[in-house]
Amino acid sequence: MVEGREVPEQGSWYTVVGVIDDGSGLNQAVTEIRDLGVDRDDLTVVLKRVDSSEPEPFPDGTRYIIVPGDRRGLEVPLGFAIAFIVLGIFFALTTPAIGIPTLMVFVSLAIILFAASLTRVGVTPILMEMEAPQEEADSWNEQFEFGKVLVFASTRERRLLRPVREVLQRGGAIYYIVDRRLEPRAVHQATLHRTGGRQAGESVLERTGEA
Image (cartoon, rainbow, N blue to C red):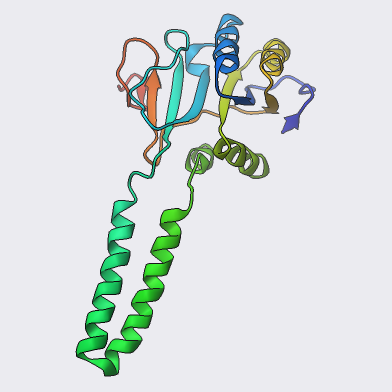
């Protein structure tokens, strides 16, 4: 794992990871990375959006993953939390001897569910699935929650590392170089998209020809 400098020797795969501001600088960086010769299946942008139906202004074929920017999917834990409290009160009123201890247990479970519903998951499930370096992954997730976008550009050609790095730096990004391939996949309610052609949420198996 290298930050801010070149990888010293050739390896089978490298991934340049950029942490960059959302906006025109991101769009320009993606376009320039594609123009350098990075294949469309070797470049993935991970960003947060409330409305995933809006297309992104990336070059045709660019692979990008959208993490929901709302709190969808929280209805179930919140519903269980409320149900636990209601049941606990019911038992406490009808059978105080066992109802009050039961109420305390149910309230504890409800607190845990409420706390979980307020915890931001961010991009962590995606980083965990592709086994990103832990220390860097924590930083990437934190920056992602502050509105940054993650760009993953993988290549077997060491000569591309410097130009890709320079593109990201021109866009104001912090960059990292990992000496293996990192391929983000859409997990935990995230959706995979590709500009032009296919619809939102295409299968993550597309690279194998199964979708």
